[in-house]
Amino acid sequence: MIATSRLAEVFVEVADTLVDDFDVIEFLELVTRHTAEVSQAASAGLLLADPNGQLQYMASSAESVRLLELFQLQYQQGPCLDCFRTGAPVVNTDLTEADERWPVFAPRAVAAGFQSVHAFPLRHRRRVIGALNLFSTDTGRFEPTDVRIIQSLADIATIGLLQERTVRSAEILTEQLQGALNSRITIEQAKGVLSRTHHIDVDAAFELMRAYSRRNHHRLSDVAREVVTDPGQHPELMSAP
Amino acid sequence: MDDVPGRLAHVNYLIDNEPSLPGAAPGTIGRLERLCSALSRALPAMGVGVSLLAADNYGGGTLAASDSASRVIEELQFTLGEGPCIDAYASRSPILEPDLAGRGTRRWPGYGPAAQEHGVEAVFAFPLQVGAARAGALDVYRDAPGALTPDGLAQAFTFAEVAMGLLVDDQHGIAGTQSKVNLDDVLAYRLEVYQAQGMLMVDLGVGIDEAVARLRAYAYARRRALSDVANDIVNGRMTLDRDTP
Image 1: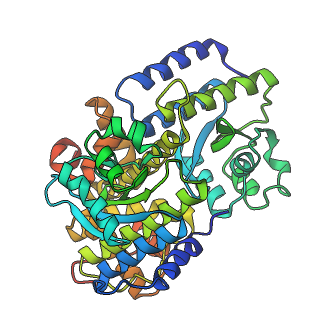
Image 2: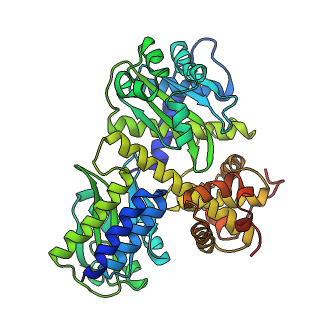
Image 3: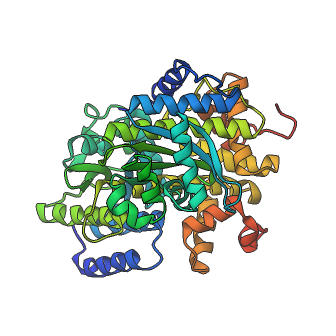
């Protein structure tokens, strides 16, 4: 099920992101998009744990998945939660037969058009720091080789968070994670500002901000922060289209 | 599973039951002093301090501390112009330094030895922030090198969250209303809370700090969950206007 022809390109792109102008939220979004693409899943989502051990939404490749990730958090059930608690991948789960396992989440995911789900732990040594979710619209099954490759993509996400190739210390990880969580909050605040400014919904606001950041070679987190604290820096983004 | 209201309510309970020092300041500062003492006692730590900081680097200073010795240590950073709380505020992430004598002194060649002279061997700084809204930092001091435990870290982050709430409410004229009640609930809705904060900035024509405070004050006054109010705002069912108390 893995599009191996794309794998090499994906690793190169991800490695490049680690070097130039690193922005943690953009990086995590890139990981989810590439994971979805490489695994030929419909969509992917990524959650990270805060210092209280509570998973928080960080990124996804599609809007429908963002809602499902939030749904898992709201009801504290789902593949990401299982994966996070056990530290083991959740693979090849048929959602139509998962009602007992996830009585609230499974029907909701099926209603959203997904048939199978997989989750991979983001690990740092013995610590599980989050989970990467894949959703498929078919019952596509991952072979063991596929599982290893996706786990590698999850591990790359962790390395990116650490901003270093060699793992250094638990302190650095906590600092980075907390920074990432705060960046996510800032992006949500900026979405609110743009949503009201342009009379669009928050998801359209996010797309607007992301497209603007890319076009102007700015880091998404920087633009978000400036939209909230110093919007004069981005007149093009703040004025009517 | 984390229980948000319980976690924050527990911190407020600890603060409520923390004895005041003689000559303690009234109002928010007094409460912040008790917050510092309560955290110092809970971890335990040698001392805790809270400082105000601003992006333009002027006017930063110690706001509260668990005791007079910690207040002196907290001030060192402003005297020397370097230190963990300054870095934490600037970087928008915590600065955790379990080894002040070694790596800490390489990072802060002035502050490291100066803090050590006061007995500090490890320091942990937590920015007081909610996204782009920033107020300052909370510092934890220890007299022996070594990391905080995961539980200790979790405690410190929770105390920082409460401290930020106190500062935001105090800075925007709504002091005293929320020090004992926390309204943040189910985490899954929290994204909407932050979106609503951004929306209120535009609706009210205010900065993010005030938007954060106004949203809290509104929910508190009407005994509604913060996430419910946020949901209403995000879905266009309501907003606040300049006159809404």
